[in-house]
Length: 138
Image (cartoon, rainbow, N blue to C red):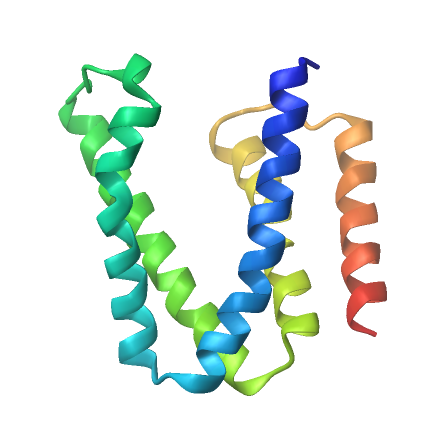
């Protein structure tokens, strides 16, 4: 695995780890509408991505991909709404680890619909992830 991937992964863990705490604090102080509008407002930094990731330009606009991107975005926003609702009603130390199990669903669906190989190592990873969440939330 390349150094870029390791550093990117570490940054992602740090960002999402801090995000879990900030999301809980926001959920304690705001209603659902304000939480979701705050998420939308955060997208205002989107133009910055064109500066940071200009090597990804020009954007390929393929209709099938756009449909899947819209579905993905709708699922992401819906998940965020459910997550904030849960954060208003349960401890972040329980909600965030449970939400971190989403890769288990991805592994199963990728296997079924995308015909990706699920190796014994990945199965062990799924079992460990479930055990980790159980230990974190017990």
